[in-house]
Length: 331
Image (cartoon, rainbow, N blue to C red; front, side):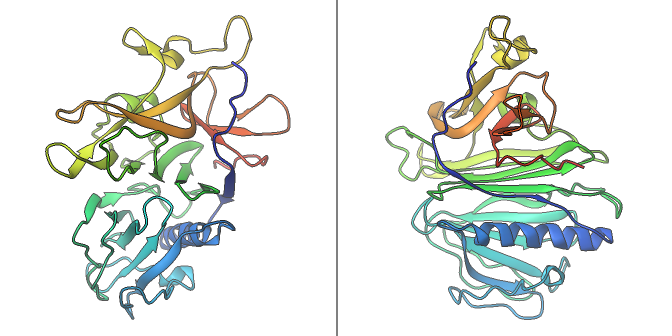
């Protein structure tokens, strides 16, 4: 098919790499994410407050205590956390990144509107409406990355601030995908439309986190943490498991049935994604997802479209996203 027309304009902070020990690489990765999100030129995320394990801020003080990567501390006792806000998802949408006892684990918690309060150098803040996306879970670094493992990561955000995506690579594969998004054309009755995707490998080797199997199909794996979650209205407001949907026929997605290029156009398929739920009582397709496409299974991570030097779209596993014209760093 012809290249799709973008729904949104995008900002990019991509191709981050790290060096030194396993701890240093983990610290650099988390610090790079924070720096990327607050560093976007248009409608960036803002710091609500934070802890560097030595000093914890108070709600709303706006102080970024992660001045350097070494301020990101994992520990069972005194440890680091960071609360960021993106008012374009909802007016007070906040995310708490809480470092666990081990560098392979984090806790990711959402406050859709109330906002976080409290917190100390040994305990993360809480919110009256908090939704725990993952607790003590592997993130894009993986559960067993060693000091020699490079973890290239890529952050992108729409100019309107409604969509933020983070992609991790390791050894040429996708080891993690995290996004915070406001869907397009959400169904009526979804009073506060947002969702978080969290698909991160939890195994000794990178375990493709953006495949059909992870994002569209089972959303379950013995070696990965895979969640797409939002608060849905039925029967009362509660956290619900979601999934992505794509074009298909029978029981197959188009891109898995036609693994190569289109016979007529010789172009690879790029099929738009929607957000849906298959769990009663919130079943249905509930909105579209901006500027992300399921592709044929033939392209590889790091491939770009079109087949020239413009590199407008990049492939990660079975999905394509807008890209900034650079060569994606994946190892």
